[in-house]
Length: 440
Ligand SMILES: *Cc1c(COP(=O)(O)O)cnc(C)c1O
Image 1: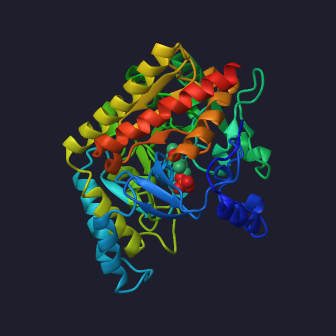
Image 2: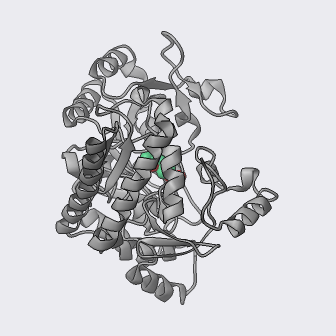
């Protein structure tokens, strides 16, 4: 079933070599292709909507570095801006005008935050926002939701305890039970669970953190009323609401999910797109809350390479190309087109498939109904994805290597109707093969 019709010898050799250097041959686990077949591709080049591997196979890319590359690969304006900045050196550990420019540009176009702090990854942004919420409220416990990912932060690598246990248990070795116990894990899309939890524990809870567009465990789009409910109930119990917008920020709109749903969280975290392909994260909120961060306030947070000038330049060159609302409309329209085409094909063939989508994010969900909680995802449905993923590699389409990962449309592909149509037609063919293989 998983024969390779394309040459992948170089990727395979490099992967074997990498195993001698890195645990599992990778520097981030999902890259290892463990939930699909074969060795990971070693990519040597990206251009527009394509990536090319070491064996010279070219793929239309729907992963886009897991989301940061909303414009596509090797964007001309970003590249030129980076080259210009790099002429003057790479890092000073001092404030720079580049940091001001990116900070100003974001704050000028975002009604939901009025102070920012730059960091170097999404994980760091979330970790810092949680500390700030605890420092600001002087409370220790936090609430997260089953099915949301917030980076590899100790207190967020936690799942619900079994049975009636309120407090979480860690999902990684190396996290002290005492940390996991400070995290309460609730199901998504369940108002009553949140209300009951806050009624009982609100006085010890610093914050509720949610991916307002949960996109790390399938795409579990929440009802707007549910997100509004979270806002109201957090205010009622004096708990901060944190939107983790590391994926949704600058993706579902320039103002992210806060703007998309018009909901004012207390803190927002960013990553991925904000750095235009270089390592940048940020957290932001009102001046009142953010002034609790050092050196003004008592919540310590720092970073040697924070607001690195080269990364700031890349972020600014990227965000400047996104700010026009017609850009987001075009991206959403083309993603709807892709989803509709695939759904219509599945319907005509009698396949169980619905394509969840929001903005330029989509997820192939091998289920009849709309899924809003992680427990509703059927593990068996991933068998279809495995075949689909393999088939698409054979025909030159790259999806992230797990059925729990979402796809991202890039501007480069959205604007090229012929190649978008070609990718869709390859996806239809791969669906035919997946459904005949798994059903057989
Ligand atoms: C990717 C992601 C993170 C972690 O960001 P890194 O840059 O990988 O550390 C955190 N939260 C969400 C919602 C993410 O999608």
